[in-house]
Length: 198
Image 1 (cartoon, helix red, strand yellow):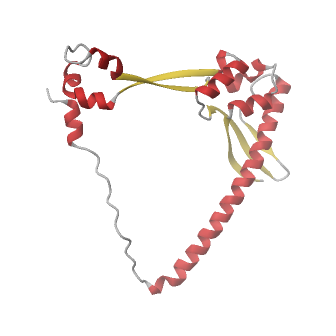
Image 2 (cartoon, rainbow, N blue to C red):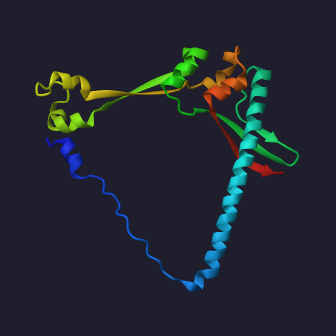
Image 3 (cartoon, rainbow, N blue to C red):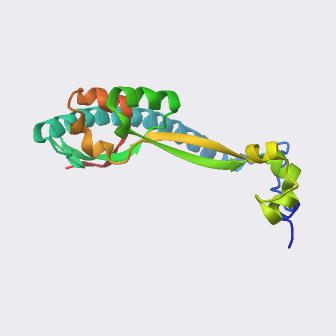
């Protein structure tokens, strides 16, 4: 059987080499390139304005989400936000910004164990894989050729923390806290979709 580590190493990813930029003078495209540059500037300005408006509407949507949740005592799900002549769909999701162990501990201390999930991924130490690649490829764990001290270091753990799935729909279970504060603490992802003028 071929050594898996040597086979993977034999075909490494190739990195692109950087080249000096070549300039080609094309005078007959002067107006088009100039217009394209102006349009791109306008697009950039509109994108910046759209982001500001998006943030304002989303913040209002979060406030309305909280009002609906508190008034009905149940998860409201998605809803349309309407004004005089426009509307947009507000979509809460059961996804959250990433948290680290320190933030995980803070949230557990404040809200209890059910708010946070811990996920551990085990990874192999690349220096030891390099050192024992052939042996690992053939035998993985029961080799007498791997030093006892190195066996313990062979696999390491990567721990990730996240807000528990389903938290967004059970916010009313944390009624000892202000819902706006909870949302600020756990940072669920809220989206806007299909803004329309009626």
